[in-house]
Amino acid sequence: MGRTVGLTQPIVAGIIASFVGFAGVFTVVLQGFLAVGATPAQAASGLLAICFAQGILSILLSWRYRIPLSIAWSTPGSVLFAATGIIEGGFPAAVGAFVLAGALIVAAGLIKPFGRLVSSIPTVLASAMLAGILLGLCLAPAKAVGLEPALAIPVVLAWAFVGRIRKIWAVPAAVVTAVALIIWTAPTGGWSIDHMTPDITFVWPVFTLQGLVSLAIPLFIVTMASQNLPGIAVMKANGYEPPVHTVFVSTGIASILAAPFGGHTINFAAITAAMCAGPDAHPDPARRWVAPVAGGLFYLVLGLGATLAAALLAVAPPVLIQAATGLALLGAFAGALAGAISVPAHRDAAMVTFVTAASGLSFFGIGAAFWGLIAGGAFMLLNRKWSR
Image (cartoon, rainbow, N blue to C red):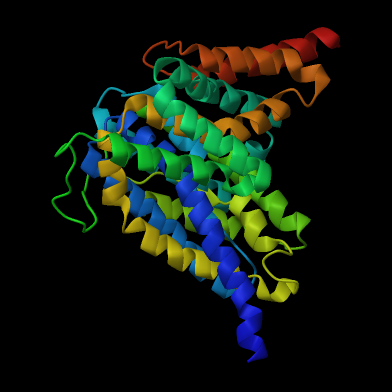
């Protein structure tokens, strides 16, 4: 009896972590897929694929190592898609980029010098690049209030008031409010779902140089710098030594397998990892592995609702979705901006990266995120050479 009661706490913690992780940013994920050319059915299939990939891996890895190994999708990756837009070759080329990004993650796990090279990318530049691609999306709530105050203000108020009570529930509260308004304002007969079964579509990947440079490499970098490295830090802060190389290889392979079904990269979780690996999951660190197992099982259930989520997004007023998306990303933007200016000596280089990534400029079909990293890196090297 005591053992059953003892397991209730990590099970509940895992379910809450999955719900918060899904409800907080599923709109970001779907919008990212749509931005790079996916149809609503392909976007729903992609959401289903990554829900299943991260759920299954969370279960298997946590069970195998008996530590709370939480796996999540790359939210910064979805933001990158929204900032990049459709590349030459459309969604098949984007799927090819997803495959290449997964292969790079596998390489980081198998080839230790490559992994060390990736880790050597200055955190300030990676953070500045992420902040740059987040900026436009984070301005959306303010713009939405100006354009459609009756729709946007209730979403912002739900986020603000619930956040004062329990910060972790602020974004889910905003999303639930947005969903309620979508249903309330949808025209009669304006939305209908032919089926509740999940959409599963297959897309043959197309590999292009633009896809590699504009999507795959920036996706790999933001996933490593903004998800994997913080996720590892969360694990270590709670007294765990995660099998880093094994997780890189397994998440990279899972990302490759999910890509033809529309899914993009998965990685170490960061925020939800803190919920599953900390004392709130269980006082005994040896029992916290149950939390991501329960959370992984719940992600399988949440994935089955991907078609409904995509249908809601299809009929939603654009400003409403933009407001919810922007609020969901404010925390990530604040963290990225803080990381970008954390080293005074490199602030100029970080700001060059930030403004270039935020500018939306494109050369040779290559997006601003890549050029921001190149510009900031060049400026940093110039500063080092000049200071000698």
